[in-house]
Image (cartoon, rainbow, N blue to C red; front, side):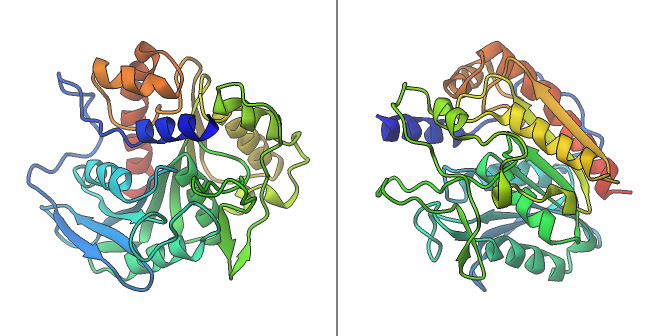
Length: 319
């Protein structure tokens, strides 16, 4: 039953979403009108897609886009194309479930994200001094890890994030109690799932497994090491994990360590795990409600958050 629920949830997370007519709130940056140039990247362990705005003139601010625990590149690609339409050079990066990558979200090398950053820095289309990273769910976990290790990152947008590294997910072998990530061939410290009956809600697994604040130990993501502006987007009715409480812990950890960069947390009390992304239609919002929240709340949250995400990236990376 756990496996069935997770599969349904992850399929919902991979839902393609399109802007809802009439047109959404206008972003700060002017949108590109022509199709972007797309370059498939298959080198140095990367499975990625470089998306270059059609009107490119000289190096532009650049962003690494990461999907979540649905795996593959599709979600990162959709997000990347949205951002490329705003004038950003984007590297949509897969980290498992594609050719040459781990088959499951088990001990995925953190070096994958560092290679993505190094690749983007070396591209003539990208300004190496203005690079950000955006990810949702497990992609947000990875984005925060990357930014905590690499000071070149100037902006982080983490949608429904975690403050800790969690146990990995392998649908083919539930006996594997291993980290989601590895570093230099060694597992990154993680929080395992606590045993207990399955209630039909995956969120309960995370709620009962979540350590007390301050007791996360080495599994805590060292967000205080981030040298970048940080925006979190969380959902109070998140059906997969407690993204708002975990986001609040991130904020308190940053404050306790005298974080000197901009920090913003957009919390949507009535929205679910599908809160981050471009505005959606009522029908798509209803599909996202499978991950928590009401269709109305999910629709309203996306309409509110997306222009704020674009404005945050614009203010951080374009100035």
